[in-house]
View 1 (cartoon, rainbow, N blue to C red):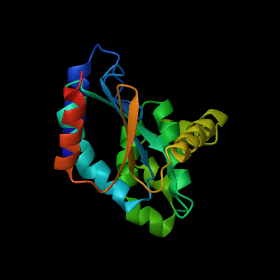
View 2 (cartoon, helix red, strand yellow):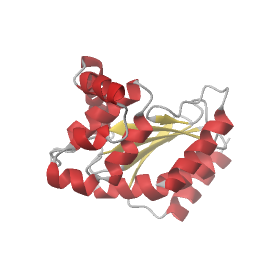
View 3 (spheres, rainbow, N blue to C red):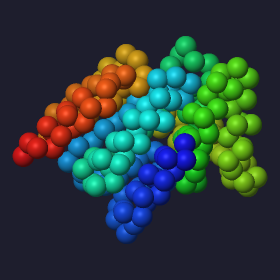
View 4 (cartoon, one colour):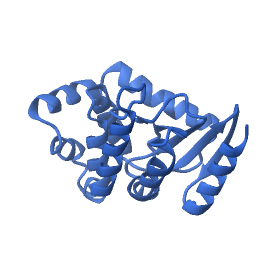
Length: 197
């Protein structure tokens, strides 16, 4: 988790003054040649692995240098009863610039949340009382609900059959990559895309 914070801090420093957004659920330069949309569920163990490990490498090797733009998409699975509330809290937190803090704690406390269902208690650990109040109100806001539903609808069109799924777009062509994937293979694939004109 600390490594992710260091990588994120480097990304913020390198993209300062640009149009890159690292406060919400998007990372990097929107005009980067490759777009990766990560369809993810906060209650999914494989999504936690992607968040904790592979995503840091994608940030270091592709997002920070401006080669890839990443969007985390909310895709709570029906089999995970706390996936949707987690997505609501994360999406609401993105509205006040606290997405990363909330996403990190949701993945870090995934087992605890799965056992207790106390999503709000976990989220409140990383927010000030004022932020917690705002996020709680925003959680059920129609805009937050619409964003999650839009991500779910888009994921069904891919189609996302499991999480996490990476929807990689380059030059107007898209390819779904299901996790787990060996990072060396993913790197090879991304490098081949970036080598194309």
